[in-house]
Length: 325
Image 1 (cartoon, one colour):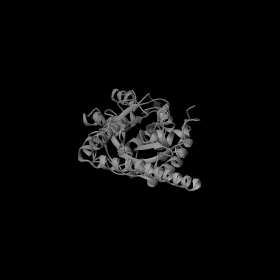
Image 2 (tube, rainbow, N blue to C red; image 1 turned 30 degrees about the vertical axis):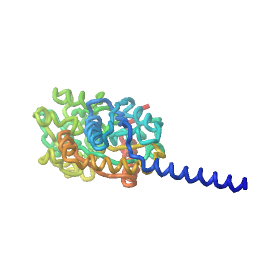
Image 3 (tube, rainbow, N blue to C red; image 1 turned 120 degrees about the vertical axis):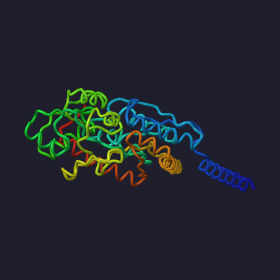
Image 4 (cartoon, rainbow, N blue to C red; image 1 turned 30 degrees about the horizontal axis):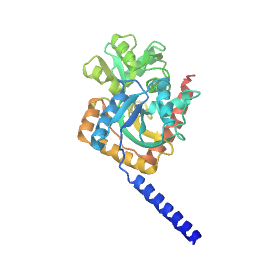
């Protein structure tokens, strides 16, 4: 009889555990504020996109999605912080592709593994990258730039947001593909590079559209070409560089990640929420104002993109000789 009651008690405990697990699985997510970590400083493209998306996620869920900037080491500090955070879905990483797929080839120790330490939830946006020039620069398109650079090897200075950034590496790709020798001038951020471009201290620069769109629209700099693989809605008359140099294109992305082993049901709910957010008309309008647009790629497809990008950028970094200790 005693053994019978023990079995009954164990059965009740088991049933209670299953019921509790199912209840937790069905619990509304999120039910408290969510931290959206941006591993770059306020004011940049990634930060601006995160605030647009975060605001819409707050509206959709009734919970705050708080953007927390954790800049440093090219994005490594904030990314490593999220890698070590609790895997409960309440600490998310929203990062630019450069910090996620380029840094592992640039730094000896980033503090994170882009495949093992995270679950890829979804991309949220893509933005334009453009080759821009000072208004007094003689060239007006990619072909004219290449011709001029061949006539003046080592004379044209190309500014970037810093060593190892997309801006820098695209410039190196351009040098190699065109067989030219523009001199790289690294700055501490895109804003400083654009400022000196306007002032004529450097002649050309590769810039993200969110960082340069106001200067382009105000006529303070001119566009020589688009780095993306297609024309941009914000600059319909600017031709892609790959029309001159086949294969030279970059399509940047901004995406959301959670720490590895975050429960699958939370990941699915996050994907659904993000898709709803970026499909909202007001979000599309706000992103367009930044020179960006929604980009939806979730789960395994996003992971496949990341793996291919890691391989691609590792080769570009190696060819450029760029390295940061």
